[in-house]
Length: 348
Image (cartoon, rainbow, N blue to C red; front, side, top):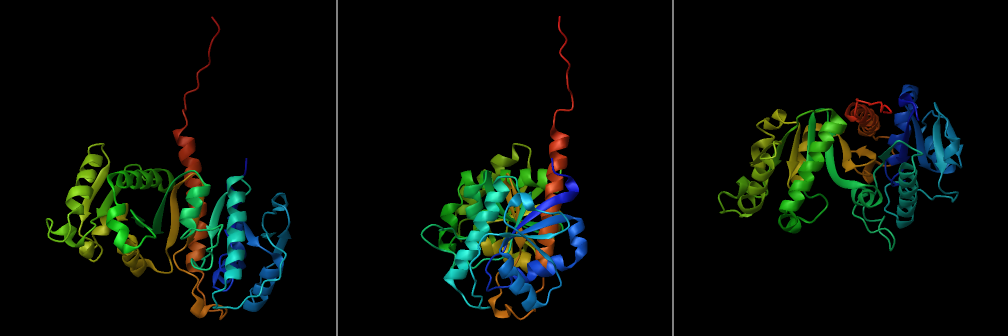
C-alpha cells in the first residue's frame, strides 16, 4: 500500500499552446510542494524542457518511460510521445489538441490502473480536441465514461461549493434535461461527496430554481412547480437537509449561500458566474461522484496571455492540494466506515 505522504499526483498537460504547462511548472518550482506529493506529468521530457527554458522555471525534470520508474521527491515526466511538438502560443491547433488527448488518455489509464493516486488536469481547448475518436465536450464527460460512478461538476473554493444539474449543454436544452431522475441522482452524488470527500456528516444543500423567480407561479415557466419543487419535497422526506428552490438572482448577493455546505445550480452560468466572481483564481473544479479523484483549475487555456510568462498558477496549485486533501479524506472515511467489530468464530 502506498504511504499517505507519498501521494502520486498525475497531471495531464492540456493544450500546449495555452498556459497549462506554465502553471504546472510554476507550481512545482516551489520545492516544498514535493514534500506533499510526487508529481507525474504526462507529456514528454523534450517538450517540457523546451517549456521550462522558455519560462525560465528553475526545476529538474526526471524523464521516465515506464510508470514503475516514478521517483519520490522528483518532478517525473512520463514520455507519452517522442514527437517534436511545434508550439505556437495562443494559436488554436488541432495537432496540439491531439497531444492534449494523448496526455489525458495516458493519465486516465494510469489512474484506472492505480499507477497514480489522483489526477489533476491542465486546461484543454474544447474545440481542437474533437476528432473521430474523441467526441466529448470536456474532461468530465470523458472521465465519466472511463471511470465508475455518476459524475458531477463541483466548483470548490474554501467552504463555497457549487454543483450543477446540467453542465456543458446549450441553454435551450436545460429545462428538458432537468428530470426527476437527474435531480435525484445529482443530489445523491453531491450529498455522498460532501460526506466522503469533505468530511461533512449531515450536509445542508440549497437548490436554485430553473426559471427567473422560480417561474413566478407559472408566469415565467412551469418547470419549477411541476418538476423541481415536487422532486425536492420527495427527497426531503428521506431525511436529507435539502432546501429550495431559491430564486437565483438574489441568492448569492444576499449572502444566503454562506448558510449551506453546497449549492446546486440548474445550469452552467447560473452557478459558475457567481462562483467565479466570488473566487476566481482560487477555485477548483472537482469531478465528484467517481471512484477516482480528478481536479482542475477554475480557468481555461487563456490563449491571450499564453507564452508571455504572465499566468497565475494559484488555481492549479489549489487543484493539486485539493486533490491531495480529498484523497486523504476518502482514506479516513473508508477507515471509519469499515466494520470495527471482528468476531472470532469458535469451533463448537
